[in-house]
Each structure stands twice: as C-alpha cells, then as structure tokens.
Length: 217
Image (cartoon, rainbow, N blue to C red):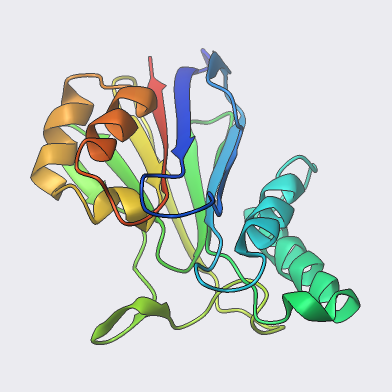
C-alpha cells in the first residue's frame, strides 16, 4: 500500500496581552514527509508558576519512541509531577496535552487531556475529535491537567484518514477567537498554521495561540 504523504505547518505565538508564551508544540518546525507521524500541542496553565516548563516537559516526551500514544501522556504527567516534587516553587503547574499519531495504515490516533483541541476536516465536514475538559460555567478552569494528579482519565479516539483530509491541533487561545465555520472555510482553502495564527493576532487575543495543521496529500 502506498504510504500517505503529509505536509505540516506549525506556529506558536505569545500574543499581545500575555507576558510569556506558556504553550509548547511538537514538532516545533514545519515540514513534509511520510507517515508514521506524531505531533502535539500543550497549553501550560496560565497564571500558575512555570506553566511554560510544564508544557515544555510534556512536549519533550514526544521525542521518545513509544508504541502506545497513551504512554506519552502518562510519561509526560510523571515528568511534570516529579519536577514539582523536586522544585517546590513550581507546585501547582500543569499543562493540557493533545497528542496525535498517524500510523502507516493512515489511521489517526488521538490522546487528550484538558481543553486544547484536535479537529479533522474530511469530505467537507469539520469533526471535533476531543472534548473540552472544563468545569461547567468556568471556561478557564480545567477538570484535569497533566501534573495535577497522578492518575489521569485520558480521552482517546481513532479515525481513518484519506488523501485531502486536514488535521488541526490548537490551543484554546486560537479556537476562542475563531468560530468553527470560519476554521472549516480556512482549512478548506488550504491555510497554513502561520497564516491562521497571524489572523488571530489581528484580533488582539488575550491568550497564547498555537496551531499545527497537517495536510494529507
């Protein structure tokens, strides 16, 4: 079977309001290649000490080679937990994690904790594969995040991809500024992550903004 080819674009920006970018992204450069491929977005908990360290710790775990996507989330959670135990000034830090792996058969696997998102545009339909884990009525409060408890409830989803499909990973700083119809239209037009994030920056967003767009070609 012919391997699927992919082209991906990546962009992460602090935005005009926040003092630092607590989002992390893997991979951190745009490129192209063939499956298998893995990627992730990580939103360090804003207002908490060292949110950027938590998201960086999670993203660095993606450089390892594990068979199961859930293992990446568990290892990242453990790394953040242990960092806090050894660095008392960082207690209370955490991060979201939305990680994907596209296998050689063209199946997209998703593992997710928090309120970042994974979308797939397929056959002109925009499908949200992740559920936001926020406290009802409190959009900025997470039900769970990496680094906040030892045992996480990890969302998983699998979906077959086809040529022409587009995968979007993004943090809440992006989707809070753009409606899903707008996202769908832009993804259909073949927008890059750099351009999409630039469009959000024009609206002077309150949060950091991160996106990965993966085109199956």
